[in-house]
Length: 108
View 1 (cartoon, rainbow, N blue to C red):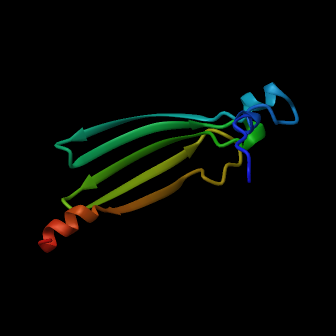
View 2 (cartoon, helix red, strand yellow):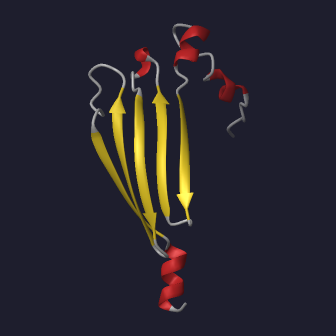
């Protein structure tokens, strides 16, 4: 029988070879804002930060979105603030479907 080891959960917060300082470098953060008009049109902006020793992804995002009853289409443009970032000047698209909305249209 396998014993439950709750201390194992917390071990991951102190297992970095560089100690607590390296653990702090593994924290990345992002912030964003969104403006919604009539819950159908969206404008978005944000910033993502990651430590230079843990990936060095630092970029701004600008985006827009459009929502209909059963699908949403979103686009985002990434502007890197770090040197040699492969994500710099990339465009991302997302197409989403609302399965409950599709069910309602189908009459279920």
